[in-house]
Image (cartoon, rainbow, N blue to C red):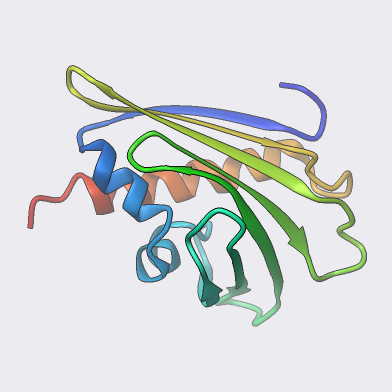
Length: 146
């Protein structure tokens, strides 16, 4: 892993469309994106190139949290998403970039995520752990046939 970055890969029994929608539907994101123990509120989400989003994560245990927002740079349905993220907290400086690649494979979807320019005060392994927890929740959401 490069400093201040994380890369993740998962193979998911789902369809590219479902996975893509899970990254852009506010209710879906609030369900799967936060790490364990956190609640997510999506305040605004405009899923179009140049569109913006705002959300916050709040610890269920402590009530403390962070709010952040960003802009969508690329949206290719069922294939890829890229967006920026900036925290409101002045102690978490920098504009992160997240690139999501979705590829149909024989058993479902190959999902690759790269997040770069993570603020230096956030340990990369902590960010990686948060993504792993979120992706576990994503899998439960998009693999369901209910």
